[in-house]
Length: 471
Image (cartoon, one colour):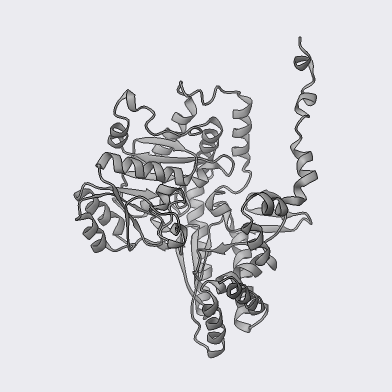
């Protein structure tokens, strides 16, 4: 027996001690990011007072080193659908690591991808096959490739203000110029307004459109497709031999009170559906492109094309185990129905405040995807303050609300997009009535302060200085 074979497990494992490393270097987190990663992130966090140090997390809550708890109403931009460290997902990951599977050999067929595909397709009865990648943007890239290949057409339509990812293909269908600027040339594409069927038909009439990609509810601003739009768009697309791609990366897996957001409209059956984020369980990046059988058969038309679209880590055992655990929890704990009920409660409580606060213009959304929009007030005093912020940079008032929610009430939220007076709430789908009460009470306190001219406006002046200085 060799020395390595006879050495105790603790000795062999002791060469790398993650706990010791974090204890020794964890306090350097912001400096490490400044030196080695995106240096603007720590700068931004310090500017708005978000440079917190969170020590641990569970469910819908974080805790700092002093034991203060924070309510998470952001869920990692939707990744933490089940909250952080759900015990079922944790156990599944421990189990798959302990199983020592022969993973990613590339020349076998492991059971976990097939089992997860089967489970996903059970929630998607009009779809037949799944491709597994590693993220939402990869899921979109796959859908774009498949649509262009099977139609033989180059151009993809997308909706203004839509967001589908930041890699080159998905960036080509990104509806915000701020993300696209400087990265041309991109794929052939054309934006159409969400809900505008006439604009869609005009573009389809040119004969070169492969597909329309659409978020049933746009993440930026939380704008829902008008009633009847998705079904009518689907009929137009199919009449012109083009495909409908539903981007459910953020809206899917229960977020809007149905498994998919497109299911709110009867008769909508997208040709391709993209999912990710919550499928990961918050642990292992996972994305999936679901599609109809004829699409996959045309893409993978022969053995020569078996690897024509693939991903090195796609379908890995850890991601598949996490996904299976997530879907099991969703079924067993009735997560979709809970999200619908809790979301209805949250929106109704917030909507009732629109009569009380003139700065509060609208509350909208579905399930636990909620947009809170602020608008120009009626009273002269508040109009002057509002105009000051708008002149400096649109979106500053929403940021003025987000900051005291965190600093005074320990609730993490964020604005819904740049230059928008909208806060988007996408909390873990497991939040309960107590969490709703906590958020509404805190939001009410901040809005009271904003209407009374308190500390919120002092922070507003700081933001104005920052906005002007960085023009």
